[in-house]
Image (cartoon, rainbow, N blue to C red):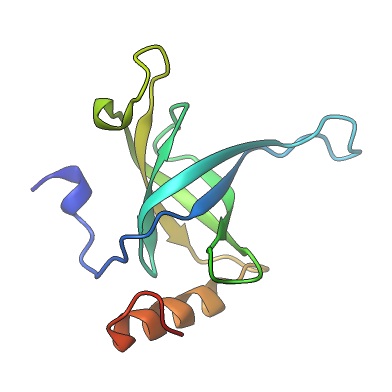
Length: 132
């Protein structure tokens, strides 16, 4: 079984913007947070696969925000990097490497996880990834 085929749930093949907090910055605000902007390949209630322009370390936990094209607010979640590998299929420029990353969404207080799971359940049960 391929690494990307290990999820046992349905996925929505959507290209959505995903913001990943790489470094939270300083508490007093003098050092800003480092945010990596990426594009999803597919999303599900418990994880997502995306393309990034810098590698992420497996096992690291990050704050993420998923901005769905058809939703007014981003979903703030916490996710663990499950795997990361260079992906030559998406590279448009040989000098700019890209990586494909698998994230698992984690339970966490102060996130929109219940709303995220409810939205994914509605979209999967409706038979159309664009219906609410």
